[in-house]
Amino acid sequence: MTTTFVRNLLAAALLLGSGTHLCAGEGQDLINAKDDANAKGYGRNVSQDFSTIAIVNQLGTALKLRESTHDRESILNDKATLSYSIPSGKDYQISLNGDGESDDVIIRDGRGFVEYKADSHSVGGVKHKNTWANLLTWTGGFWQLSTALDTVDGTKAILVPWTDGKTLKLMVLKKGNGFGRPISSDYNVLRLDNKSEKELPLRVKRDGQWQDDGKLASGASRDYTITAVDEISLNGDDDQDDIKINDDKGYIELLAARLEGIENNNLWITHFWWNSEAKKWYGTLSKTGINGNDNMILSALDGANANKITGVIGKGDPLVFTITRK
Image (cartoon, rainbow, N blue to C red; front, side):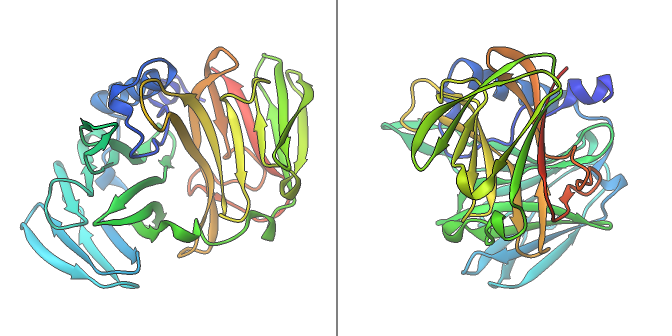
């Protein structure tokens, strides 16, 4: 893994609507790391690899799209797709609700990432600014995919990016049914592979009850039956650093931090998910702190069935999550 990659690695795909602008501690550190990396850029133009962006509407209702080059509104019906050419050398913005104030996808061509601007919102009567999350980021070796959650034009949605040749695709998916396929349809085992030099104390939540699961030594791995485990704590205290298996909803996430001063104080990072349009499983990675150790990386992209270039995770056991420290 290159120095440039580690320096520019996104801290997290942020869970939108969590009130992150008033937070402190590890959660704010993750946000600051992302913002700093975005400001510096990632060393490759988006338009070097993608000439088109396609919005795929699976929201259950029509969307009003407006793009920044011609300031032209288009109606995208449910179950339909609309494509735009990606201009070179400048930022390019597509509003998913037609007003240009929020629900916007912005291609930062010269800085090498695509981000999403969620609605401003209120938490405990305090108005928060628009929240931003990266959907696509150049790592120095491949384009990293990250999902996001938001209310898009009034409907709770999941934004799911993927790549298809020279086209960057973004599905706007209604949140209600999760990602649309149980994990256990294609995988039986989740394997934790500790490639860091740190020993990790583990706890496991089964049938709603937490229990100790011993230590995961440096260089060791441990297998878990996906249908038998709800969560796995990587620091032994079932408070954060938890991997949560949402089998029926089709995704696995990490609780990277608990954030202070807000009503909903969890920062969840989606690491593995089903793409119902591409009909494939995808994974990503994040840089965070685990068990008090900085610069830890949790990755779903290092197993034998993973393709870092596309983000696709092939079907079949085991599904591997690696833990490294850089």
